[in-house]
Image (cartoon, rainbow, N blue to C red; front, side, top):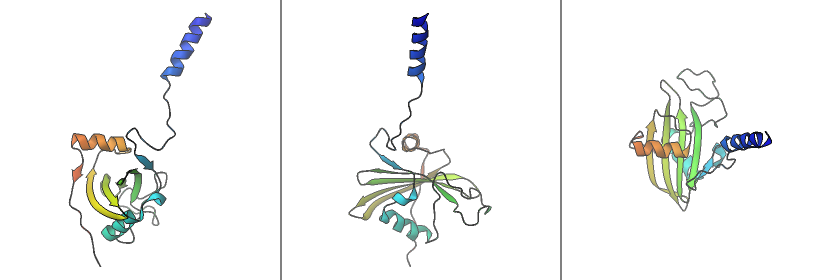
Length: 151
C-alpha cells in the first residue's frame, strides 16, 4: 500500500507544470513586461512615427481596447512584451480600436542608432516571443512599410 501511494505521489509530482520565474525564453531572449525598459532609440522612433501622445499601458494595466474612449486618461495600446537578444529588440503590443490586433516591431540597434526595422501586425494572439516566432514561420504576420513623420 505504501508503495502504491508513493508511486502515485511521484506520478503527480512529475506531471505538475513547472513554472519558470525567469523572464527569458528558450532562445536566449531577455523578455521585459514594463514600458520603463524601452531603449531611448525605440522611444524616439515611436514618438517620430505616432507623435508625442503615443503611450502604451503595461500588461497588467487598463487601456481602451475599443474605439470607445472608456478610460479617457488611458491609451489605446497595451504592451505584450519587449524582447532583447544582443542588438535585436522586438516589441509586440495590442492595438485597440474598431478591431483589436497585435502590432509587431523588430529593431536592430547599434551604438544607440536604429539600423534596421521590421513592422508587422496580426490578428493572432501573440503573447510570447515563442508565439511570435511560431506565427512568423507560419506566415501569419502581415508586414508593412514604415511611415515616419518628420517635423
